[in-house]
Length: 300
Image 1 (cartoon, rainbow, N blue to C red):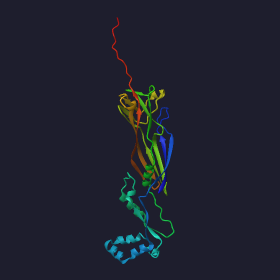
Image 2: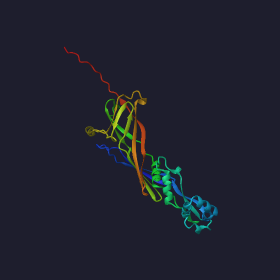
Image 3: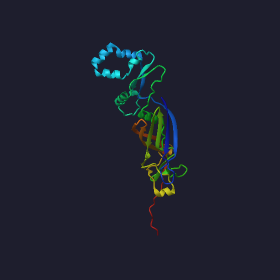
Image 4: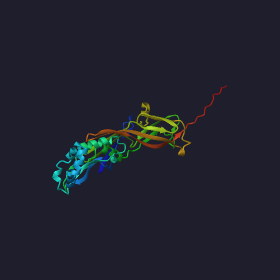
């Protein structure tokens, strides 16, 4: 089944006025193919099923080896005698297949199958009438929707930026902040038949791993301005060596954002998914300011 998936990304990029609230919204629309974990599958004609149920061999075998379970089996095909002469209509029976569970779906397949079979009995469909439409359960729909979208990786700005190389300086606090489409929240929605699902992914900070330095981030950073300098920031790097020994004289910085994910669906399904982390590597030129120390001399 093809489904339409829409995503909204709320940017973490700060507005530069002293906060890191961001708020700009971008969107993405994609399509995805999803198969139900459980569905109805065409089976015998009315005549074939009635012949099997009423056959002496089946009746004798099932009644002696399974007892009351044979009565339960026949009860799942109500009024089967009414279709005993129908060679064109078909019974549709519930089927489940674990292969269609999404990667990372931690639900127990046995529980899914038992619940579906308990709530979905075989259905007889006369020739020319529509077969039962497959229903994508909320958890499967939510995971298919999430897997279909591409989460933008983070981009950053920094300060200071000295000279033509726009380098920061060894030993100083280098302010770092999220820019552009770096998301702090992602909302993904999709609908398949009667079921709609919404996935919400939220992040609270950048994670920075610079070469030759240490980082401390508790948020998405605040752009440096003279006014903001008095207030401070929640994301800094202190480099302890210049970039001279790296290719192109720039220091690599790994930038990650981790998202906690929840979902809910109109069929009553709710749950969580494994944390999703975006990762990219950017570069920052780092310069070293050299000074000459001299020992004071006695003046005559």
